[in-house]
Length: 387
Image (cartoon, rainbow, N blue to C red; front, side):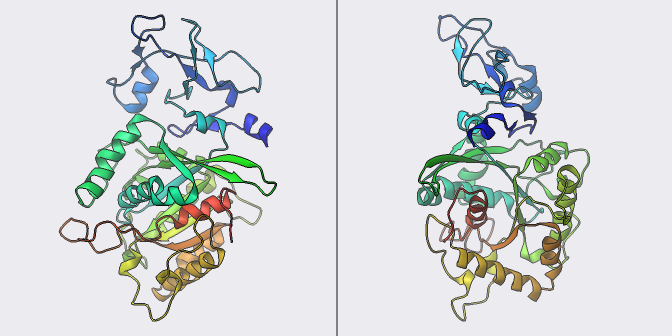
């Protein structure tokens, strides 16, 4: 396994270029105070990626000396001779976290139609991973760059949690260019042989407007995003079922569009289905469920913290599947079974209550099962045990 990690190419979580491990570049540490080191200069590749020169004056990037398949954690700057451990993508010059370079990282793509509540789901999922769920899993979640930290606080956490305002509908990337939020979730997993192994999951989250998924002018980065994904989480607004949405919000149209992109770029198994796992979550499930006549799966709290409760997982899948068929949306379930070798259905609520007048309900944000899709993917990736 160690050799596999050493030679398997790395996918940049920003531009999604596939980079051999021995080609990962380095950035000089620069000149502290009046000490020796390289002075900042305009990094044209980074400036082109972020669309601005304002934050692109940095010490130079250089390629490491050829070391065959051996991965270098540090290298000496050829200009000033100072050692550095700051690794960057050789294509876009964005920083690559050490944990991302040194572990078996996986990329999870988040896809949803225009009204599926992606922005709110992103905000609440990350908040839960930084707090309750992260503690439950003994997992750490860290942003991979300062831009992610700043954007999460400004566009997600402050308005939703501090000011209790609903997040606005995402504008198209054609008029409001965006970059992904990139986080590294690291968990120490004890294998069956008793060995502790650090495993990492990269959450690369685009807050994509529905029209971006069909506009040829703005989807090249989104296409590479989907091509690089090791798993996909689809968010579905139940109010758009069945087939009542616009071309930008009809759930099966969105899923089919993404599926064809992934199929064209990654290929399929012999049976024609995709190997990439797909988690399909009905959002706002609290507004959709009738009062509990009994203790149905979606009326119960998730049990067995720290592991995936397999009985609960199967029960929730079947209940959501039944809801789809009750709403004449069984075609969605049929499509998934025909095109994905591994898919699972979920019911989640990011807010846990009905908002009004553009504000969160008086009880505040009370998330319900928002972590379920991610827990299932951790289980699929061998990062979480099932019981």
